[in-house]
Length: 327
Image 1: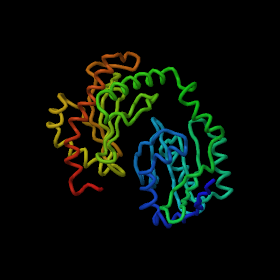
Image 2 (image 1 turned 60 degrees about the horizontal axis):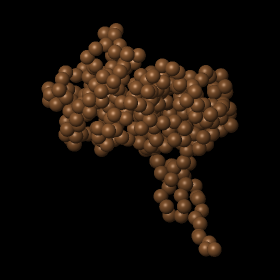
Image 3 (image 1 turned 90 degrees about the vertical axis):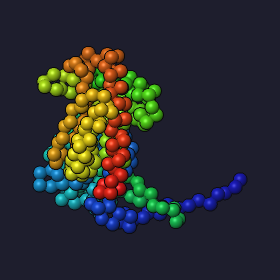
Image 4 (image 1 turned 45 degrees about the horizontal axis):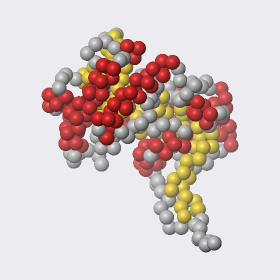
């Protein structure tokens, strides 16, 4: 029997990898949000923004898990009263469903504080404490690791059950509709095949081009002029605090005629100044709620999403290649 030489895991100082919390660690966490989601047992997060204004303060990182807001407060060193207070303030200001404190070490009193918050909170709000570590073997590149130090009681069981017995009847109707739309899109073009988990909410994210264009393509049941409607929309998110998003929106709107001609019809243009997202959308021609959505509605949504992305993509590629956009 051959005995193979084994390496030894060695800890790496966190600040040897990320020198600055706001400039290095927070942007990396945004880019690596899938690692946070995996650690917490959730689906992939959608990044809402970093340094997000909350009153007179700024939350380090804000994410979305379906319809739920996730706020993350990250720090170097051991936990302190200041960051615990900030986490609670941001969670309250953003009406977050999940509040996550990320640190290198948790003091016992702060671990107890988060556990106490979980005990007194309803099921609609949960607090987590994550320890950030880094390890390497020999001369290998350092590998980050999140370790869950604080979580709500029975969290793992609740996560497993959330997709089955605890889905409401109405949410199941949404999930069934999105499943069929998703399957149809997967048949149209492989670019739509990345997202494979249907959501059980009124909105469904079918394609994300955040890494290159700052755009996601959604289906959504909402209201227009007090009447229910189904929308196919391009959700614009291009950077922190809405500044880049506003710039991207204005550039796209200056090409409105070109985009609408390529799409084959008029679109709704909704700019939200100083907010993290703006929208460009097409509406189903008749008022429609999820209760009345049928095969015709599904076929319309698939066609509208495909045409919307095909109309916008050439313009987005041209705009994103401009020198003033960040890499």
